[in-house]
Image (cartoon, rainbow, N blue to C red; front, top):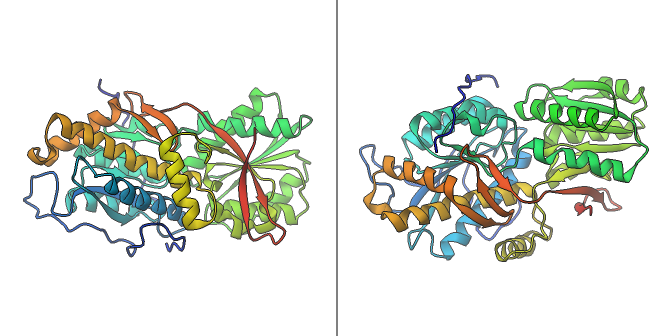
Length: 411
């Protein structure tokens, strides 16, 4: 079944990672792990294996989530290659730094498609980037899986665009419901969002609609930029309206600083963080002021299936903490590529297919498959939207030092 295309204009605006994973090799920003095939190559794999492109935020203000995604894909590469790769042929990840802006993602996609000859791409990290870069893959007929692109309209970009990240419209309202369970008397809500980020703008619409649907009073909507560090004016304006709940849609760096300044200015009510704040890398930003923040989740370490148990144990053994959502979603994205490639290979040996044939058949296999992943059982609609069975809500709990914390899952 062919997806209905929505033509979206290209917006031309605008890691170090220290966690140790089982795979110890790391690449400098903007480099890749595959040898560039000759430009005349028409086969669908190279001497190193089947190349899968990875475009994640290794630098910029989005790196706090991108570094968790890099860990996830490297874990997946090692895990699935140990399992035999694609019916005996290993996968080989080709990394490009997507940064945090549209042009970086566009450049990364072009490099992977035209030079690295990848069969598909996992990325980019941000929805804002996806709206700019995904149409490039669509025109080249290269399958894309968004690992953290939750804004409205992502799968509708084209026939070759899908995502393993559940849309915010399904996940975010759960956080507001959880806040009401913690404080049934809350009435006034203040909303903050990053106006220069597509995900944040899409998410805040969902949050604001949820507030109205629950008959809560939306007392103010405050805007900021993901590059901002000073939120004194917006925070003071909101606090003066005595909100019982504050909801923030932004990224980890700006969102963490906003949380910290809200608390320092005296706000004591509940805070909900959106999906962009859904990372333990926020802890060093807001430190003790992170305590109590509520964040809806598309992943729980307690998902009870064999692959998540192995994934969780490996991550905990290497990092001494539970795996976060962004790592799990990135791992799941590589798993979908591997299992779909296996399905293609069982019908037509991959080595006999041209790159164009493989990309087309891989896309069909992705959309028609069913997968038992670290996220639970998932599948895709014909449009490329993820179908996921369950979602969760966590609350951040910081230790006495204010330097370390964890996600505690609410029942």
